Structure formats: structure tokens, C-alpha cells
Length: 255
Image 1: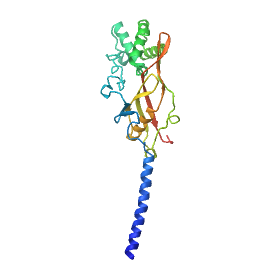
Image 2 (image 1 turned 90 degrees about the vertical axis):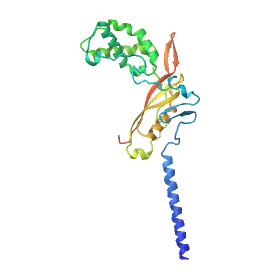
Image 3 (image 1 turned 60 degrees about the vertical axis):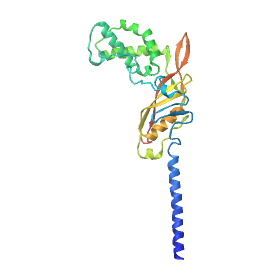
Image 4 (image 1 turned 180 degrees about the vertical axis):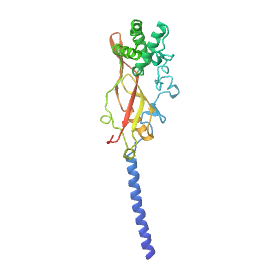
């Protein structure tokens, strides 16, 4: 009889432990993203996702994951700028060539949207004006002044993509309580390739902070929408594919 009582006690304890373990596992599952990879209709690796159906062997050649970090990687300029860096002066032509490169570098955020189009517009409408620039003793100030003029001119012919949905409201972003409690915070930087409708076609992590938060950021980005980039074509605005850089910030309520 005593053995039966002990056996029953053990069974009850195992049953209670089973319930506690199930509850714990269920709680962990609820605070992490449901998916462990790309959502339906997407495919990819840890840091790169793209819409399914694309020829993955041609992802780089089709520019889905183009290197837009510098003007050199975009094939816009190939020489180092020294005009602003150390005030080195050469012939008038050399100085103005260096000045042009410096101005282009100052416009890199716009260039990243569509390098070929932005550069062609710069060469057509702004490069000729550099011949008339009067330089001062403040090279950086000269560049900044021409940058502002350049941006206004470029905006007459090109419009960058802009987000049309709001993160956290239109598009939820998962931030597990366990990571929040551990003070794991920061920004995930992403690069997105958009079609002419402003729909993401590829997502790439540029800088991550944690595998789960990186996954959450990529998942949210696939559901974001943009007003696409536009270029003026024969006095009409035409929507075009483009790239966009995007940040998702994870911060505790006390930050």
C-alpha cells in the first residue's frame, strides 16, 4: 500500500512538472517570431531574402543585392577626392574635377536610390555649372553650398522612394520580452530593392544586432510599402524600380 501511495505521488509530481514545462515552452514560442526564415512567397539565406521565382544565380547581376556603400562600388567615380580632404590644389581642371567628386559624395544618399539615373542627371544639369564656381578658402563650405543647389535641381527630375506605411502601427515589429529584459537594443540597418509599385523585391541586412531581432526586422520589411521612386520622362513622372535603405530601432521604454 505504501508503495502505491509513493507511486501515485510521483505520478502527480510528473504531471505537474509536465504542465509547467508546457507552459514555459508555450511562453517562449509566443515571444519569438513565428517563422524561422523567409515568409511565404520569399526565399533566401540568413541575411538576404528575395521574392520567390527569381533566378538566384543572377541575383547580383540583376542588382537585387547591389553594393551601394560608396560611389566607387556604384561605378560612379574611380579616383580619390583630395580637394576637401587636405586642400591640395593642382590645375584648375584638376581642382574642379575633385570638387565634382566631392559634391557627388555629399549626395550619396540620393545616389543610392538609383545610381545610373541620378548620375546622368547630375552630369546633364549640374556638371556644366561647376566651371563657373568661384572657390573660397573654405573647400568644405564650397561643397556644401553646391550640394544644396544640386539637390534642388535633382529633385526637379528625380524623386526618392518614401515609406507609405508606418512601422509599429501598419506593420507590427516583434520585440520579444526576453530580449527587451536583457537590454538587447540597437538598430538593424537594411537595404531594400523596390519595384515600380513600391513593393519590396529583396531585403538585405547591412548591420544586425541579434539573430532574432534581425529576423524580425527582415520579416517586417517584407510587409512594408513605399511610394516608388519617380523620374521625369518627357515632362511626365514615371515610377521606376529603385533601392532604399531602412532602419528598424529596438529600444526599451526607458531609453
